[in-house]
Length: 104
Image (cartoon, rainbow, N blue to C red; front, side, top):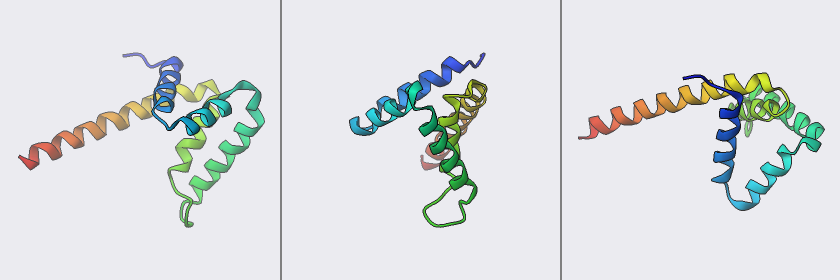
């Protein structure tokens, strides 16, 4: 199955639609093309926060979020991020099915 940048865009749309309304509107606002500089600054801060995950509050969760923000302006990141998301989904589903089988 071929992975495309459109697949990543669809995933982001699907996931942001599941967010509470206020956060969903914020994500949509930040994804607008006119917000390039704000999005770039936020992405860099998230990536740095992910790198310094040793410190309190900061964590590895910030790194993929920063990369996802960057992918709005660097289309070459969308395919690797979609592949990574698919791998995480497959791995999670495999682990969940193993745990369910053990519980029987």
